[in-house]
Image (tube, rainbow, N blue to C red; front, side, top):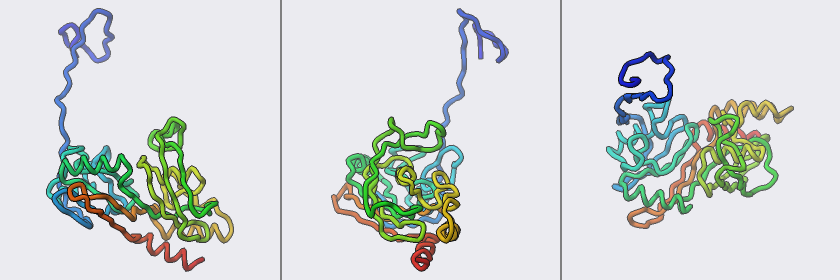
Length: 277
């Protein structure tokens, strides 16, 4: 830092009328390197690919996650992605939370990216989830229509807040378990942590959610409490899986539909829950 052309100590206070010159270091563009990470690719062509993201994998590089992401894996397996969102988010049309597994469509060409993003904004892409939610919902199906934004008490979390963006989640109960319900959910909007925040807001958070349902199983008593703790141990991760994806191919207009079964350990946990009921 220079003051009136002279180098000064960082602690020196400036006074009105002085000219301060600051030289910024050149901006560096981060590089995202291809990495030979195992990846289940369900479909690919010149325009797009449909992949199954495992739980625990971050979708794209971010602070604290410079490598080992889905983008690193995609660059290795596909050789290239659309330039939209580059350098850190090339090809990413929509995202899944790190602890959520399941289906994603990614773009390999810029035109496909533009068209898929437009369809997503117009709610023409169907995204369906399977989840286990603690407790017993009061109805077999319904809609949660509550705005979501940053939690004013913790900026790393999301919450239902009046000034948030509109968020709509539809749910249907598939099975009743001892201290949890097995649900199918459909997103009408795509806010950060939407399913997790909405289920927590109605008092039935996702089983195993480390942010919105930490130690929730401890709140049950008696036989229900013992079942809840045993079920939580069997899940060993958040019970949320992106199980269905339906969209129109951006080039051909063909209807593309994909489903994904529950992965382990969720599959075994669900089987145990059914046997225990």
